[in-house]
Image (cartoon, rainbow, N blue to C red; front, side, top):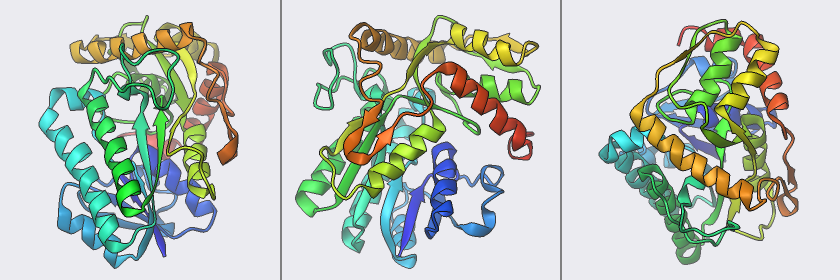
Length: 326
């Protein structure tokens, strides 16, 4: 029996695969755009299948051919790209997610771990935010994540699939690519660590709830391993940080970091949504509420921006060949 990672060579997928391989699991990476750079250190330890979650026959084939028992569904179009092309995001995040669940039902997959987002919330969600708070997405990306949560719960209740969901804040770490207001936080640190010029496309007063990739991956694995869960959907905590604070912290470690500022209109709009949500969470005193989740044996390790930046820089500089030139 094997474990399938959709978006397997993507940002979260590649880091997740690395950790699962260390535990000796048989891993299948399923991806439309295979990024060999991100997985060059584990190429000989995984099976890679080029395929698209949008295409029903390809999803069915990868699950049936490789005798998949559990699925980590991380494939998705990110926030800014989803705003620029609703149709593309609909196909991947909605049609693709349906394909994964329906094929899993037919072929007997036992468990699906879904990566959702705090973007399912909005101004009308109410505070303090809870897992059962009103979902009020103000971005199309958030809309697609609401769909993923609802269809996951349906397949759990109707068909018995062990659906488990992580509502992540903004996950940052080495190897994050693509379009998105949240991507800038990762690329800023990564470029500086490689002595390259970073471009900031969002205002410095932008505030985001940050979760380091190592904590995110540990959460997903803990959620997957838990024999029982008290909830089907979990909010995962993070560290509220502004772009200005991130720059100041980065320059403590890399004083000569090269930074350009080119504000992107759509990235700025999405950033304002995140800033509003983060500010409301902080005002409600919730920023530390979800850092320890006892029933799945998970605890936030990287609890400050200093810890995140320091480890991030060290990781990139230790694995330069994975991140230079792409």
